[in-house]
Image 1 (cartoon, helix red, strand yellow):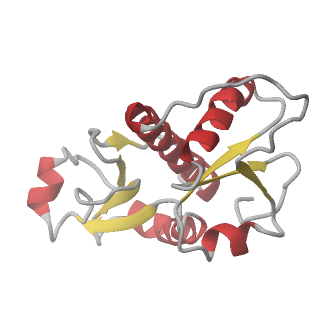
Image 2: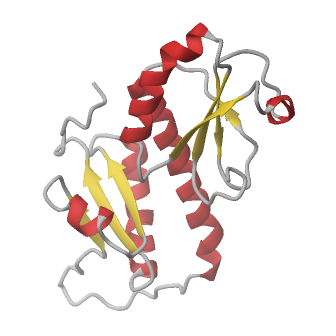
Length: 191
């Protein structure tokens, strides 16, 4: 399942007898709930699947690895809390999306810029918020790519013109949306 996934997969390699693994279980289950639709969260009994544990170099428990298509697995070394685990997964997801955008950009039609008529063109990226996110994105049968940004973030500012270009180039193929994380400080169970 993991190697055939087209998204980010977090796997906890555990042993049933391991006290640290047992202590991580409620956190891991909450992380799975928080990351639903963003990343797959799984657990693998390394005692029952010793060949897989050996293949991935598992030496201690619990060990968390993040798998993404076309990339070697990445070890998670952060705190064993929901928020840092979710943040790490989101960073891996963003890297995957940016990789896919970069990879597929050579297949996208190039937009030509004509003369300006004084009117500003509406953005092809949909403004998303806590009021419309579930209805537009989560309940949609269409593919969405969503940028979560902060207006003060230098990396986000640098991405803005590229995001606008991608939204225009992908219009009619993929829906793009953006969430202002400063404006949408909604408790999603990460605190």
